[in-house]
Length: 147
Image (cartoon, rainbow, N blue to C red):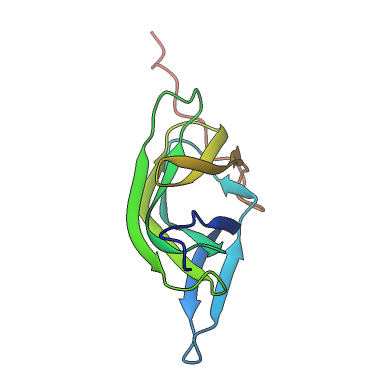
């Protein structure tokens, strides 16, 4: 007897710059991130991609991916997607694209991934201010005119 529904396991969740799918169906991940390095804050990231692989599930599900700012009280980005797993022996892959993500402050941000309101993983992504290499500091602004 086939069960009506089996909640899937999250096999992996990776934050990267881009995820591409080849003609043969395989995914190619570009720029897997453990830290987001920025020249200053606030700053806007052109795009961030969350690659999730689900396994051992059966049925229809709703995945929710949230990007949470420092302090935990602000969720600047959230995405929901429905997916179906017709066989528990197969995997399902979801790719979430967050475009124009504004980071107002440095520090730990978090990615949360849940399925049908069950939290599966929460992991930190640190936003770190790193000056541009080889760039000299700009000139100081002129002072007040002499009196």
